[in-house]
Image (cartoon, chains in turn purple, red, yellow, cyan):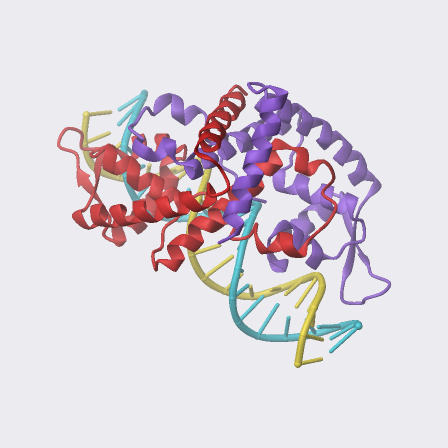
Length: 162
Length: 162
DNA sequence: TATTGTTATACTCTATAACTATA
DNA sequence: TATAGTTATAGAGTATAACAATA
């Protein structure tokens, strides 16, 4: 799903350029942090021999907790177009993690659900995500992590009011 | 540059699905916030009739503050491959914002620099970025913004140690 | 008519591999 | 040999527009 920059780490070591005001910009710091976190997520899964993006993980959680939801509902929840969702579901379905069932009530929609195999895989993925979360928060106290999440939600609220 | 999800806002309004543990995951909240911030950035520039991505802005700042740097150095600073940088520079050059000069000392490298037009454009872009920054931080006090940036850098440090 | 899912198409970001010019 | 920039190619995320099936 969302953009895979496997960078954000090594580069900095080599590039001590003048970033001027950039480092004081919340948007810039946010972007760099998110990039590093993405790289850590990818590294965590790769090290475990698993392949999943943060977006795919979020999708699987959404489906398992809202079994039977339609592609439109899922696309809205993910904030992407319904046409964008199609190849993503194709891939997860091809991996045997998820199925498109026929909706008994509305012939236009698909009822999405995880397969038993998908459920098992998600349990494993969830453990990997916890490992990943522990590492990215390793320099933060529990209180700081809570504060960070709270402040991030405030930023999101501010950005939402465009 | 980095991934353009113009979503993150409207979707939530429509999608009140069970997100389970997702909302407690730092990585997830970070990703959603970054997505909303990206959308705000795009909206700010679009409203002003300007077209620029956060990545392009960062690139321009890096070039103007390190005039004469090579494409390799810039790619490293941005954390992308040198081949990825080529079409990005092509576009900015086509817009007349930036030039690839011949390096007087090393025939293999290009010395990157902003054009006078690029300098003027960047001044305008910087004003737009400040507007954008003000809005995304509008629900935060100055102290909270500082704290947020500090905590984000800590997360980045944690993620870097993969 | 409106909605859902799909397909076709088109960008952009991302990378790897191979080519060229230069060091 | 090694490095810098380019090109070719490929994969993934994103979107819009149009189409078929269904409501």
